[in-house]
Amino acid sequence: MSMPALLDLYRVQARMAVQQQLQYRMRNAMVLVGFLTEPVVYLAVWTAVAKENGGSVGGWTSGTLAAYFIVWTLVRSMNVVFTPYGFEWRIRTGQMSASLLRPRHPVHYDLAYFAGSKVVWFVMWLPIAAALALLFRPTLRPEAVEVLVFVVAIVGAYLIRSLLQWLIGMVTFWTTRVGALFEIYMVAELMLSGRLVPMSLMPSWVRDVAGWLPFKWTFGFPIEVLVGDLGTRALLLGLATQAAWIAATAGLLALAWRGAVRRYSAVGN
Image (cartoon, rainbow, N blue to C red; front, side):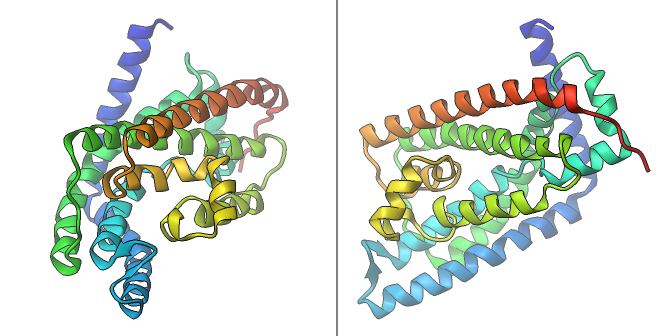
């Protein structure tokens, strides 16, 4: 398939996603509200810690912590990707067999569909963000270049997280259950991504480890682009690291896919 045909695939899949997501507005709203539980708890805890320490903790004030976790909700909604649990369902119901007959790698269909769904999710996120801003009074004054880098970083984070979870999901080509491995992944992501707390508040050895792993570049980096005043060098280094992880995970996916397809055998109910 040529590049124009591939772009058409993404355009069509994204448009289908927008149309389908609009049919489930209430469900999506409830999911977005559900996303609020996690950051609001974190925000309440760390705001209390900041107040106990004279108004700030590790250089983060109540206002910057509020900004961090409000941006967190946007990054989280933009980072929703196809779950590895879905691979079990696809194989069990025969959906994967149909996917293998398509002209392009199945990952393109997932990337395009979930990217399109973000249009609806972003529109629905706006009033939620406004309500959180009124409630928690964030300190957030990004410059134009930071907003631009944030947009690029969000795309990079989405691609990294999509490819990582696709790699985990492909384990189902060898075994019928992927839950245990995915839970390990989620714990690592929680601790090493900036999802639980800004990485600057973590011990130095945790920050060192996180810098060599992909998780930070899917959550902490995009958030701190807007909130953390990273500086030009850090912004460029972050984007370069994201690009490296995209290339690495895409390469691993291409290699693993060859073995997975040879291993694949359909399962039906």
